[in-house]
Image 1: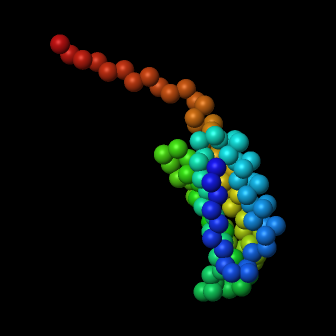
Image 2: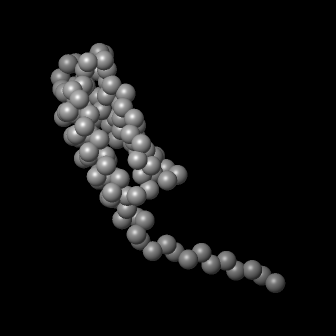
Length: 110
């Protein structure tokens, strides 16, 4: 899986990037169709400081995209919330994939 990060200059500790990468790898083991992840960590100066650290993650899953986003007082908390939501969404998608698909029956009039 390819993981790409976009972060503010000197705003995100390297160990947080490693933690996020490790959690994303765990998600890729839950659903082998995840091919890439785009992680955006940014500061929104228009919002009060208590909620201005944003983490947004987009997962490319086969022909679909799963996106989750959180804003809190620090990047670690935002990443934790975003990853929790992504895991819920990935698990829901895996469950849906395992459900038997209805057979499409077509009738042709002669």
